[in-house]
Image 1 (cartoon, helix red, strand yellow):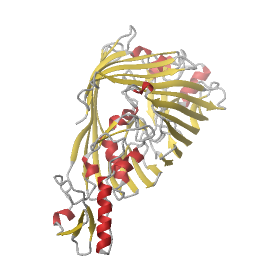
Image 2 (cartoon, one colour):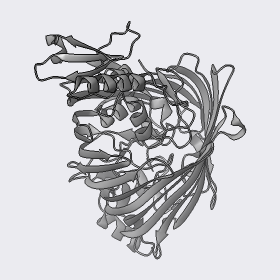
Image 3 (cartoon, one colour):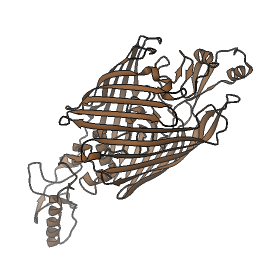
Length: 557
């Protein structure tokens, strides 16, 4: 931490101010800080509070400090920057320390405060002694360099175990690479790319081998003291709860592996213009999506595609024997034209309750399928369609009004989030036509460490409702219990974890137990199970034959 810059005309005043500045430098960090290069997240902490505490001095850019902490500690966040895990150890990157401009070298043990003068020289105040140093021309020059890293890498092998399994084996690989460069003290550039490799063999479905490249976060960013502007492809992760944040409506979802990955890995970058403003405990976030990017879907022959043309089924719709032949023969037409919308989020953090309010005009990222008019009329008349059936994937626009809140009480953090939606797509029972209805989604949850140990527990109760929807094929109400149980053991060399989602009003189950060796963080080797089950019309029922045992590796460089 650097002492405040001192501006004082009188020599004696300068000496007194210098002594005060030196004492401030020597003041210890808060007790919650684990060491000079790490920090343990406490109950009630959030990224803004921690960044404000760890930045070198009040004049350093708060947005830049937040970005550096978030980029270097992905393990400490669940979903997005709003969800900082209690108990996580943040590694303080060098870029945070480099924001300080103290005169002292790493070998000096005395605290130093600096002030600029009109003649370009620097005045160094060392425990009341005034010294004048010549300005080094190299100090004024900015020497940018590319920071190239592998942000995310994964390799996974899976074997399906049910008698009615659609395939026998699946393999998956993922790599995300970024190159960052500071153009000057205010502007920085990031280039990002990702590569996904997917294979499946055996079973009733065709063998699949797919290699696909994509852009990751690629943008030009301005970082001011209280202002940040970002233009380019970026991930917009709003909301506060895990897994299914109701106000997270501007993000592009990644559905290529259903829900097997953590929330942050189920989001893709979208072209966006983003303006953020920070003032004390307040944070205003405004986003505009000039181009709409729909959810990333798996290959049509993948076992995770929401249209199962082998069985003639649609995800989210109860089994309809009369529609099965049409679904098997149907073509899929996706509407991805136009803009993606935009929104604003106003958040307040600090002591007591953290909260945020949001208003958005967004398009549904995930597709909703409807029959083309010719096929629908043929079905209603009980005849065979004269042309090839078409499933039209639509993404209706909806108004989203919502908010979220968090409250820390001791070792526990309570979270709540809700959103009202003006246009949720539904299918009418009488004529199979697509329509929209109002919706209300909400989540309340709790995160903490029962027993004062390393065991961490997150549990959430969620509800999804269609309001005054009339006679429809879709489920009107759904209630879920979701969460995560996690505990390191054997001197933090191993970690046991269980992610789960259980339907309460109807049977819909997803369980993901995992055992990982984490002694070489940020790399880990793991073995796990994805177990799904449920009644007809639920995700667990639709994917119940995709239960699999997996083993793999994840890491960063």
